[in-house]
Image (cartoon, rainbow, N blue to C red; front, side, top):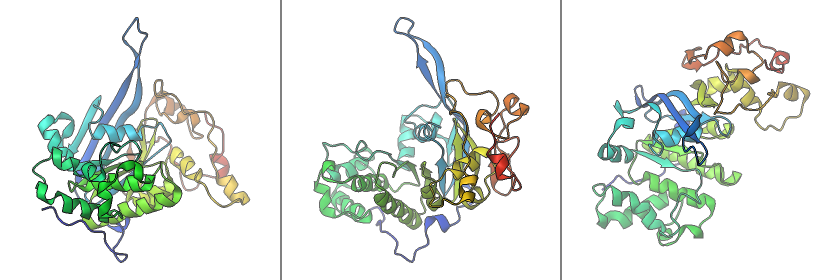
Length: 360
């Protein structure tokens, strides 16, 4: 029988305070996902591609939460769906314990998927409305028949429901009888049914009310703390990511522009886009200094079908120079456990007046 799932008490250390393991259990290298742009019905051929993800690299350690942030449309959810093989990659590798899951056959992929589970963004669309909650949670055991004897399903379903703050009796209800936050808890219980090593959380709280968001985030944090599960936590709410994560990766237009420990990135952002993104966080501070520190980027985000040459952020960047249009900056070390993809990283001495300047 699977180990009992229980939530740690208030005295347990949160996952974000625990150091990750030394060796990564999951590595993504050179991930590319392009979507073809369809032509007319007469031509029936592609007329271009949407470069949704274009060369993403990151590693995930046991027990670690890596936050992936960026504006809507930057490719965060595409990364999640591609590493889960819900979308087929255009190029790259995804190494789980050293084995490339992008090259796994159907039987190998089935074994991998019991160890990497996903929590989806929309709790209203991710649960089958025709199935009772107990059937939804038990579905992974139907697919992976060797995981748990059928005679133990009812007991285990009750344990999982209690672990996410619901009642065992809720197993007999249908999804429409629950609120959005309760549905997301059911989705979490289903993801935990196979005792995974990794959870891929694709904006799991963005569709919920603020008060419910806090409950779900705290639940995820307690579960991870207890079972030392690694998480790829995707969100656009920077405060949620800061609370949950050990490290943070910032995406812009299909590429990671900065990655490092949460406390380092939030306190001293080195990429101009990271600094602008953090300055845009909502705050209850209307002093002249707070207003002056806000960086207002000029222009619109370029189309992923026709991104700028060189650095993709250069058309909105106040530090851009000729080199930025000629060469795409790779992720380079910019301090201890920090990487930045920028030819001219932000320095501590950069004045606010410079930061508010017009892009080139």
